[in-house]
Image 1 (cartoon, rainbow, N blue to C red):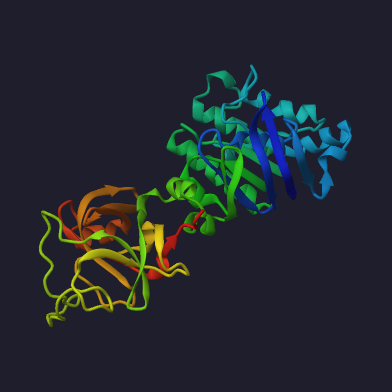
Image 2: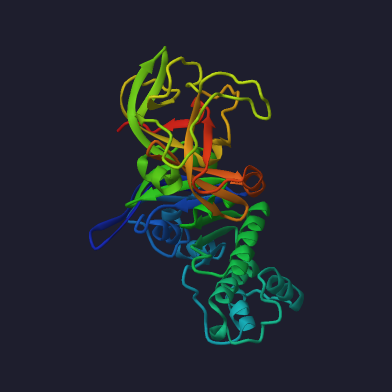
Amino acid sequence: MRVRVENLGRSVANRAILDGIDLEFAPGGVNVILGPNGAGKTTLLRLLGLLDRPGHGEIHYDGRRMREMSQRQRTALRRRCGFVFQSPLLLAGSVEANLRLGARLRGAYVDRQTLARVLQKSGLAGKENQDARLLSGGEKQRLQLARLLLLDPELCLLDEPTANLDPLSVRNIEAAVSVLARDGKTVVLATHNLTQARMLADRIVFLKAGRLVQSGTAADVLSRPLSLDIAEFSAAENIINGTLAQRGGRTVLDCGPLAPQRGSRPYGPLTPQGGSRPCGPLTPQGGSRPYGPLTIEVVSERRQGTATAVIRPEDILVSLEPISSSARNSFPGTVRSVIDLGAVTALSVDCSGINFTVFVTRISCAQMGLAAGGGVVLTFKATAVHLLPTK
């Protein structure tokens, strides 16, 4: 189902919950709605699922205007939608009774084979006779998901479905969401989990205070945010303030002084990795003056004024010595912390009072012997630096 909203808004007690939302959701992908508490994420899902009515604006379902539909047509459309609520909404009775109720209300019969398949997919196999009220929190959420799978809706709306769940339940639900998208469903998922958004999202919508701040592909929104709000929400590790200036025909962001941090080894001559021939003193790439103020080379049409830069942790290369590279930015620093995140290791590196967060693989971390207090060199391209648009 293709869903499009135009100038969508809703108010409660004269307070705007959503206002001026223009969006389109297409089948075959996961649309993730991000935003802080009170952004309007749940309200948007409820409007899309016809659980609430908009105060103004229009919703189109496969090109049909919702306001032009009769009550009977809206009921039929609602039955093509499935909803997984943040707080499980279950009835007294067994797991099987909860699953069969939705189908029975739609006049549909569910055979044993279909029921068993859905229970298996949702991780509830063998629990069909258990009282739904006695399930764990994760199992109750999986039961909501099983109910959605059984009804096989075209529009799947999920409101924080993995909040406060155990890792196994989270993996089951995330896997099911991916399968729904691959099966051609229109999936709209509201979440606070940034890692989950990075992993699942084909498209991201960012809301704040009921307003649409940015929407686009996951890569665009997370890598090139249009506002500080999004940057702080999605890439808060490396948000750097400075002043744009011109140096040798290049645009740089002046961020402050650069000097080896206490506890780190001094940076002497530049030596190739694994080699013995010295290359001379460590100086900025392409420059001749020794390191003074920390300046980050950027690519920008702006030539002056204050600016805020965002650099993704995965775009920064970590080495023990300066490396030969076309990247224009290379700075020595001191490792302040090493945090194992499972698939990757996060390093906090202090470069003259400016803290960078960078990601390395666990193997690379072990091979380089990275530990708090050790010296490293951070290298990244000018094109990896995203300057937030000015207001």
